[in-house]
Length: 154
Image (cartoon, rainbow, N blue to C red; front, top):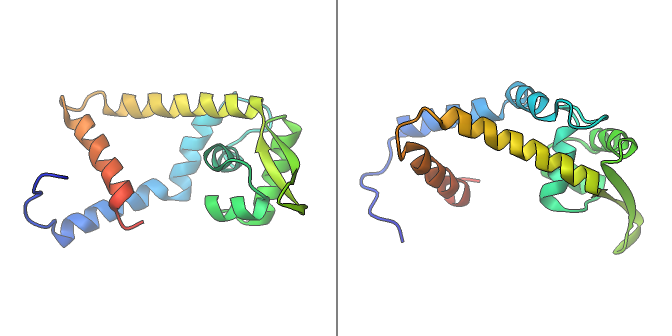
């Protein structure tokens, strides 16, 4: 149970938050972040293939069509990136035990290690960005963001 939050947030606050979220999810913003996260992690891994590798780490084995729906790319893009990631030893393809006509994309141990490196880099970037915030403010932001992600309009 949460404490009484007080009056409802204004529509202006909703617009401000929506604009900030829009900036965060823009393709250019993400591509710049992904480029920094993948730099020198593994051959065949670039900012365009990052969502495929990261998506597999979040969801587990998936076929290209299902993964495409989860990460917001088209199936052919996922397949193209998956081929490069497979050649680099970061993923492998396996027959789907539930449907032998389907092929699953599976993260390899090297792929999991690459994801760990990228997630560590991302956590460091976030911590660095919050390091100048006043005491308690970053923690409150983290709690609020988690709550918004869990209870929000998604």
